[in-house]
Image (cartoon, rainbow, N blue to C red):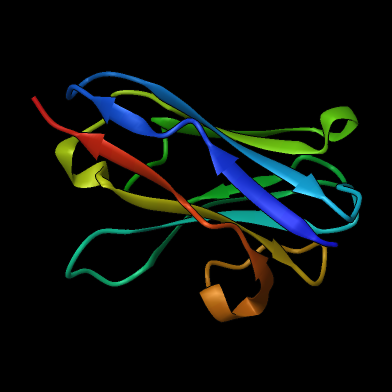
Length: 124
């Protein structure tokens, strides 16, 4: 059964860091793109970052570029999102998603499997 499970969220102060994990099961990384999305209450869902697990090429939203880093460990079938210099506006539910192909997209509907999400709260 294909499954994505996020972990690593929590409460952090502004300027702090978190590392999110997206553990995949039921399929093998290396043939698909994995994206991270977030959604804050009352706001639209936003594509944050994406990685082509075949070659590691990554993309970032302008709002997180330079602060967030996406990476993969194919042996562990896991994708990570390292988040530094966190801001209150980074607060939201973070989801990872698998795309049907190896190329990235920042559109939610271009993905065919999603995790249950992990909450990130940036507050003092």
